[in-house]
Image (cartoon, one colour):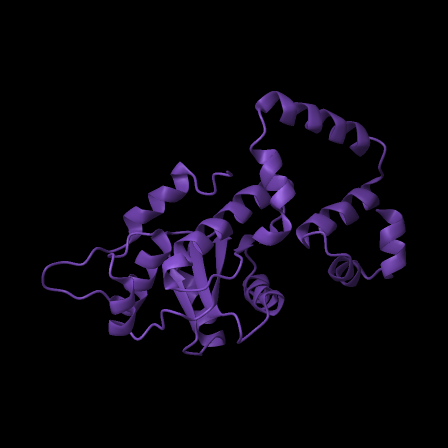
Length: 231
C-alpha cells in the first residue's frame, strides 16, 4: 500500500493544542485533533459535544503557503462565512478548509481558495482529498491532501491545485525504487529537449490543472482541440 503521510507532516501534530486539566478544547482545536488523528476514542460523543455532525460527508482542502498564514486565515473565514465550512490554521504555513461535500463542488471550492491567495499575491499549493463518510475518517482525508501537495510540488515548481483522486499514477511512481524513477526522469528529459518553451508551459499548466483538458484550455485561452493536438 502507498504510504500517504511523512515524518515532516507528522510533526504538525506538535502544533495541536492539547487539552489542559482546567480548559476545554475549542471547536477548532477539536477538529484539528481529528485531522491529525489524535482525537480521543469516543469521537461520536465528542462530535455531539462540539456540535460537529459525525456522519456528514466531507472533504478536506489543505493550502500550503510560501508565507506566514496569520494574515490569510481571516480572509478565508470571511469568504466562507458558513457553519458548514471550517477554516483551521495548522502550522505556520498551512491552512485546512473542511466542508460538506453537498454544499459546493470540489473544483469550485478549490477555485475560491486559489482566488483568495492570488489576490493576496503569495505562492501556494492546494491539496484536495477524496470525500470521507464521517468524522473518524477526516485524518485519512487530511493525509490524502498532504500527499497530493507533496507530490504536486515535485510536478510543478510554480504551485497549483492537486486533487488526490487525479494523481494516483504519480503517487505510485513516487513509491518506485530510486533507480526506476531515475530512468523515468532521463526519458522525460529526453522528451523535454525536443519541445519548445510554449509547449512546455502548456504541459505544466496541464499538470497544474490535474490533467483536466477543459480547465487547461480555458486557462490557456486555447480551443480544446488545439490543446489536445499540442499535447
